[in-house]
Length: 275
Image (cartoon, helix red, strand yellow):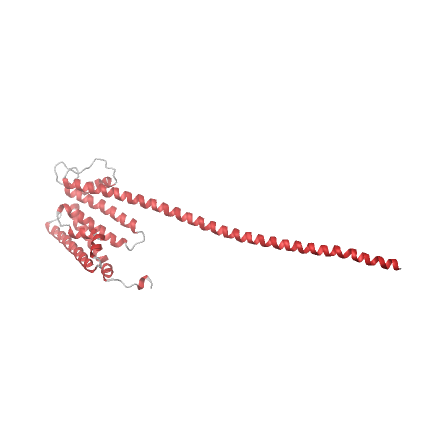
């Protein structure tokens, strides 16, 4: 039975039917979170609309989690292997945790899409890295803007701080002063280290895979050469045997000729004596 003919379970059918809608809702949630931070001058009507988008997106992901949980055969294993989904649903909409919820939803959406791609690890890592950088910059700007003694006032400064912190460079020109901003810093540094480790491991695995492929290719060529040498050795042995047979045959014919010549001379002498 081919892969296309394998019957899908209800859980897989549900996931396939909800992948794209949840991906769109994930980006809508990110937009609803980012808009008031990037443009703090927007009116209360827009803010209310964006809040309802956040609530609606959370509700959609909650329904998706509940449905997949109810369709799972091993529900305990489902919870253990879908902790990120649980975080999205369980986190309340409190301001300090909104960034974590946004990040969880974006990463969850990226994971759903990356399952269908060839280079899943790199796609997932790249989306995660960009999402963490983008959302951390928004979160620290939201936390620091207007705080006493803060030096991060605009979203561009927040994104710059997020980039240098995530890269574990930390120039020190910008830094958070609020407890919420410092909490974002801890998570960002930990994530940056993890992503750098993942990238390093992927590059090492790529080189190891390339070396294995080259070794296998060389081994295959050596095997072919050995087979050719075996065939050549067999042909040489056959030629040697043929030459030996030919040499033996010629030697036998020369011996027969040498034995016959004295006999003919002996028969000629009696006739000469008779005459």
